[in-house]
Length: 77
View 1 (cartoon, one colour):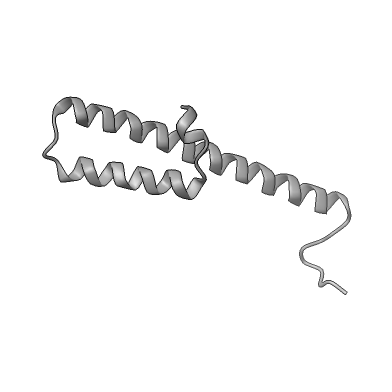
View 2 (view 1 turned 90 degrees about the vertical axis):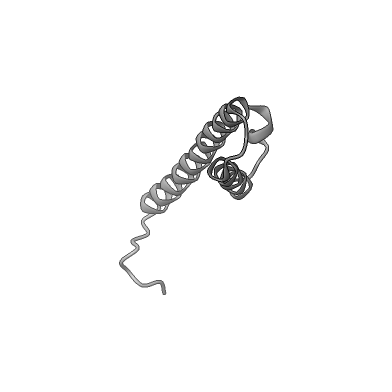
């Protein structure tokens, strides 16, 4: 999936939305529908991969701040 790995999350989500619209509109052949469905699956997986990566980065940042002694409940001075 080299094409979608170059997409940002927002681009992949938008492309996925376009795929869904085309599928919902109908009027395309079975083969085209299958190809669109497969593309949609790829885009959904790419969106999930990007979200998982973002979550991992946030988790790491939280862990680093906790290890540094920052407490989110204490006001900053």
